[in-house]
Image 1: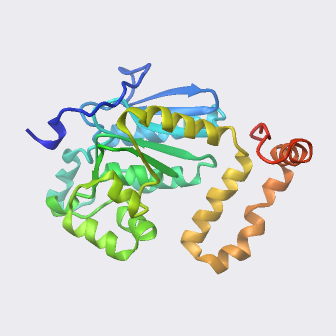
Image 2 (image 1 turned 90 degrees about the vertical axis):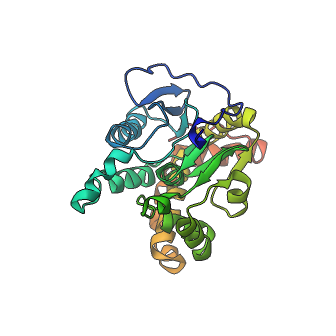
Length: 275
């Protein structure tokens, strides 16, 4: 029995309304765009799933979502790449996938993306989760970069993102050894944000996505932009760019709502409209 065939932990079933029509089901839950991967058997990353994820991000924008929840309705979050992609190795070529387009789309999306990780999350699956803004994992999740076992290293930005989050030593350890880790370890290393009991994953990630969607959407977009700028250019250059990256906040209705609420009711009572 392989790791992928192990009995699933007690993850609550996820409703996916259009299971037969797309590798990624899409539905609006209030202001949250819920993208549910359902690419049987294990959400292997290939052209079909890449295209569906990109379509899902565009769809969330078109539907004026204020947050995205990325999850899986299958046994595992994502067990890595479709191995048929590696047929290109016989020609000495890189697989033809829109990796950079996907990473840029996730980063440039001006709303937060929450990944709900359960089961196996390996290779490209971990890299997909790390392209999101927040990662919540179930206690029983098994997570890692296993590409070394195939003679590869992470192909979707995993090395550099782990370097950012956990430092060079951890990035080298994970990529060179190709091991699987428990979620608590990766939470301790700052690679994932939060670990919850298996049976709480759906409720916690939904509540978190709704909390973000009900927040000051323009300010959230600015926060993402500032973090991305800091990662790319460092603190000093981001200090110089900060005022420009924050200028839309000062035009927002949400700021007016927040300031009025502060004066009338004190902090924490504002009901933002996302504009």
